[in-house]
Length: 264
Image (cartoon, rainbow, N blue to C red; front, side, top):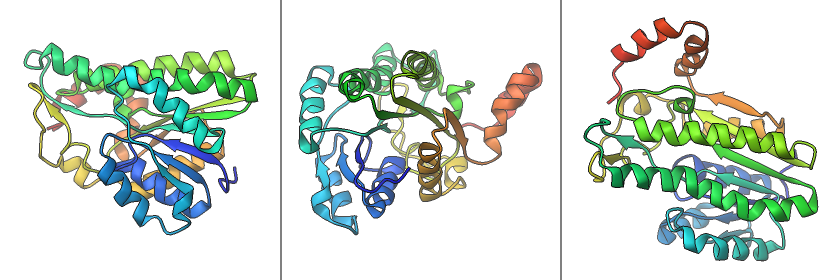
């Protein structure tokens, strides 16, 4: 796929993988709509874009505020008159045990990671179907394929996205709509620092595995390659991605292995 002049809406664009995708797509000549909760950070990202800043539109949104998403989606569509690719990169991670994590924190994670992504997609999908073309890109995770300690609700939200968008793909495969599910492993971003604890506070620590993970720009490049090749699902990362295969073929061994692994 040639991304030049493609209209791409990216959530979670103020940091991490979403931010890296902004820079790569801007360099490719795409026309961008960038969204996250932090408008100030979005404008900083826009200023760092090397190509035409007029092709980068800032549209702040909070995925947790469901009642605002319809107007945000309408505004996003009006900016360029269409959207070719929606990249759902917004989300939040977790560090807390099942017993200690409050229901309010669990609901917050599901509202942002799952319902925010689902609701935004359902607002854009009908317009894509009218045009009979469009790409829906969803950032899941390797823990969307298996669970680890201290990530129960985060893992659940990613498992839910996997099932939902697999089902959606079955419904729209012959209608010109592509669905690409991206499953990153350890990518060097601030996702662990920004994670929520069992009671909702910011974790404020860098996970060792994240610190030693794949660079965010390398990850973003692989995501664009996956979109270009229209891959239904892709695992991105290091040896941690092999966990998906190990769990599938050697589930008992995987269970023992994952219990021993340092995850906090």
